[in-house]
Amino acid sequence: MAFQTPPEVLLRQCLRACNVLKHNRSLLSVSPIKCSARTYKAAVCTKLGHPMEIRETDFPSSLGASEVLLSVHGNGINFADILSSKGQYQMKVEPPFVPGSEIAGKVVEVGSGVNNVKKGDRVFCILGTSVGGASEYCVADCQGLIPVPDNLSLVEAAATIVNYGTAMMALNRKAKLKKRERVLVTAAAGATGLAITDIAKNMFDCEVIAVCGGQDKCNFLLEHGAAKAIDYTKESIRDKVKEYTGGQGVNVVMDQVGGDTLLECIKSMGFEGRAVTIGYASGKIPSIPANILLLKSASLIGVFWGSYSMANPVAFYESITQVLQGVGENKLRPYVGQTFPLDQVNEAYQYILDRKSMGKVVIKMKEEDHPAEL
Ligand SMILES: NC(=O)c1ccc[n+]([C@@H]2O[C@H](COP(=O)([O-])OP(=O)(O)OC[C@H]3O[C@@H](n4cnc5c(N)ncnc54)[C@H](OP(=O)(O)O)[C@@H]3O)[C@@H](O)[C@H]2O)c1
Image (cartoon, rainbow, N blue to C red; front, side, top):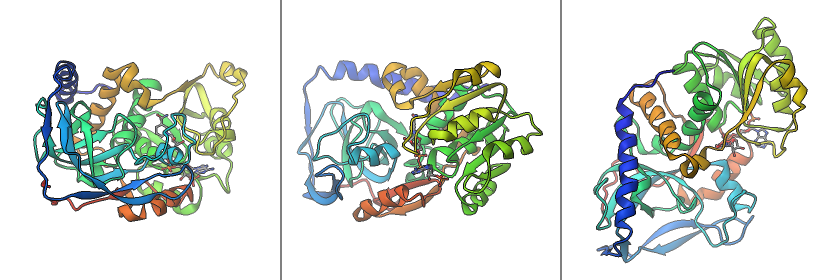
C-alpha cells in the first residue's frame, strides 16, 4: 500500500529533534520550574505483584535542557505495564516505580534547549524509560513527543500509538498486506486486535475474520469492521475459516494469543500465507512444526514494535506516521472501551486481566479543556 507524503513532515520533525538533542545534551543547563502547586498524584508500584499505592509526589524543581514537564490527560494501559507491575515483563523494573509508558497530554514547561514543542501543545509520548505514565504530571524528553491531530481527543490519543503502531508495522511492514486480502486476527476485541481490524478493513479494504471469546465480543467486532467473527469458546477456528473462505484459507494471520491458538491459525492459512506472532496473552509460547509452513510455502514472522525505536527508528516512526495519516484522513478511529480515574488504577489493571475490556483501557487524569498551567 502506498502511503502519501504529509506524515513525512512529522517523521522529519522527530528525526530533527533527535539531532538537535544530541547537541543540546552537551549543554548542562537547567530551567527552574515556577509552580504554585506543591505536589501531584501518581500510582506507585512499591512491591511487585502487590496493589499500587496512590502517592503525593513533589514537582521537580527544574528541567534539563531537553526535558519537558507534561500534564498527563490519559495513560493508555498496555499488557506490558501490567506484567511490569508483577515483575513478569522481559524488561525488569525495580520498585518503587510509577507504571505506564503511553501517555497523551499537554506541555506545561520546557527546558532551555527544547524547540520542537511549546507550552500548551497537545502531544503523544512513549516514555523512554517505560515507566512514569500513571501520574498527573511527568517529565519526558522532548525527542519522544509527537503532536496530536486535532480530530483526536487526548484520551483517544492515549489509546493510539502503541497498539496502532504495532498493528501497522505487523500488517504493512511484516506481513506486507495487500489490498482486499483475508486477515484472521486473534484477541480481536483487545486493544491490538481492534487496531489491526481497523487498519486492515479501513486502510487496506481487507476482509477481517475476528477470533474472540464470547458472543458479545463477536458482536462488537462485527460492528467494528470485521466481516465474520468466530467465538473460539464454542467454535473451531479451523472449521469456521474453512467455511467462511470456501476452503481457501486466509492470506494473513495476526496472533496476540500464542499457545495452541497460533498453530490452529497457521493451519487456517492458504498457500503462501503469512502469520505474524505479536503476543502471548495466553501466557504460553507456541511451538510450530516447520513442515506446516513448508507444505503451504508459508511464513511465520515475529514483531516486537518497541524494539524498533532503537534498532530502526526510521521504521518505528514510519509506522506511527502511517497511523497518523489514517487518523488524519478519518479512516482510523482508536476506540476507548473504558476509562478509570487514577485512584482506580488497580481496578483498571484487573479489568483487563479479567478479559472484560473491549478496545483500549485508559486512566483518565483530566478533562480535555484542563488548562496547561501549574
Ligand atoms: N509484539 C509487540 O510489539 C506487541 C505490542 C503490543 C502488544 N503486544 C502483546 O499483544 C498481546 C495483546 O495485547 P493487548 O494490549 O491487545 O491486550 P488486551 O487488550 O488486554 O487483549 C488481550 C485479550 O487476549 C485474550 N486472551 C486470550 N487468552 C488470554 C488469557 N489467558 N488471559 C488474558 N487474555 C487472554 C482476551 O480476549 P478473549 O476474551 O477474546 O480471549 C483478552 O481480552 C499481549 O500479549 C501484548 O503483550 C505485543
